[in-house]
Length: 388
Image (tube, rainbow, N blue to C red; front, side, top):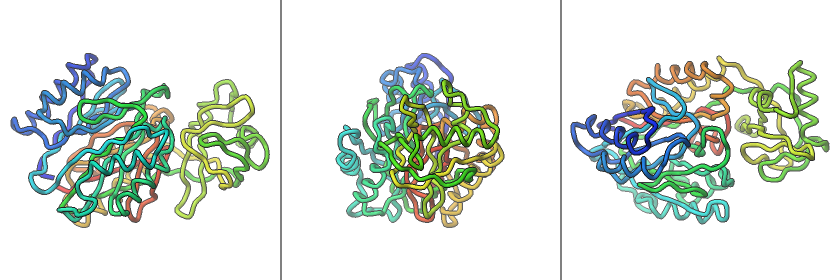
């Protein structure tokens, strides 16, 4: 990566925020326009106004990003903000944008639409192929989407990114493509590179309870565990561990006791969100029927160590190339659980990533790279490092 410029603003006027970021990026490149811009914005903003002003000020239409639930760079973070990264790569990288719509109806079709915007699937002019993927996770099917993207690209791409947020409201999220903000859709920034792109994944949680069989599930809802309404397992676990589970306001308990789906690679995390009248538990992502799950535990230090591990794995995957621009994603649930200690996690990444990073809190994280725990995750740090 020849040039990178990061910017973040707390400006509340959306047009002014976009203009400010675009001007900062262009000034960072001595007046030259970026080849691509990645941007994450709070739900407090008028996305169309922000994106139009950003495109005009930066002189760039190759814009990808999403609404978010906490925005940050290596030296600033907050909520209600907009963070952005401008990229210039001379001839060492090529960028293009793919968009897929009607995700909730046809995830395979949405993946195919995305890949039609890629330039390196059939015959890449550069040996390394990756894509930053941002999706409307509230539309569902993100696990299937990642699989479909892998199939559509012949398994030759590394994917990283996450689910768009809306400041923790869980009502409506958007992805950004150029000047457009769209729901029920997925966007990807294709990155064709002369050198490897590094992706690292880690979550730092471990089993705290016995294995439980998912005897019935409906998409993102766990109906029963070991034949009983799902909430009974949570109530038993709270009693066994001396924790308080308020059935009318369960989120404080859920944030500290997520569900881990056992697999050959480890534990894929799912954040419980709500208790339904029938005792089923709604989660932030699907839990397959028949799976063995555990209630999981972690500590603040484990979260910091996980972020450090993800950053280290991404750097190692560069294969000896010098690190350039970096992206860091983690779950909104992680930020809510850690509070101000989330800054320690970001600092752990900043200590390892010499050129800094841009990122946001997401509704689930996406990762697909060789040697890494791939798919769709919750409460998981995902780090991507582009080569210099």
